[in-house]
Length: 405
Image (cartoon, rainbow, N blue to C red; front, side):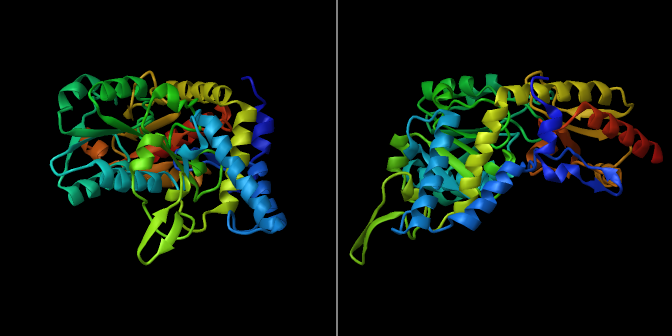
């Protein structure tokens, strides 16, 4: 591989520990990644050297915190190639980004009888907010289905779009299947019919080079905690002409220009959507996470994760009775599987005793589970700090657990 795996693993203190007297094998990266020492140090430095409330004070601490906070906004802009910093809105995470967009876009653009297309492979966070919007407005949710390989049936999308379709919302990378969806193709089709597109990038931002201008998406959302940064920090990117027309999601400090009982005027972008005191230290530490990722090289990291995915898949498909869900060639480092005759929860619980952390359950994707006629799966998901040796340990432990049943 083109970067030093040993050195990178040393950057993550949590990976050095043992679980039940066994070295930790952390394969739950799709749920949340671990933090390098550089991010932990940035968080500590903020609290110990220059913590102050941003934008609203003239003293040294506030000035320094404000500069660092806004530097992260610029880092995010460059990371995803947004045209302007005003298009970068900080939130609590992908979930809040989606809720913000669903509420504010809905208030501005959705009317009774309008339609919103939602794919069958979405995380609940990219389904429920749109259902809530549809309920408020009397709109309709239309499902874009998935085939048995875990591929969106893009060929059906054009037929699903009607003159009442206002928005298509889709994940960039499935958190269950690992499928990488053809966002540029979907966007081109949507825009050719006058339809806007929202993309959930929670599983993509740490693993793919994102260029929102090249993709031409109208909205894109992701979270810091899936990118080796702190939790409680997210991003919503939006096209400026849409954000300017959308009303605020929340009211309070920062999002106002002037408040009077006769009426309130709102702040300029992006602050119109950033009410209240934000997660200042978290956003600053997110900047350190972006620096760390870019120092490694997202493409280099993704290439290694691809090697891990192929290596693990080749070993797992040799296990009798094991089925992998999501077999598209274009996929990220996620493997969801079941073993015939063994409950996924039992597999996950027993693997934990070997020091192996995997995710079990429906992965907040009930409609996708229903599609495959299952209640849940075991999910192993990889990051650049994982190794082939860890996969060997995982596969051997899995075989031992299966033999117990």
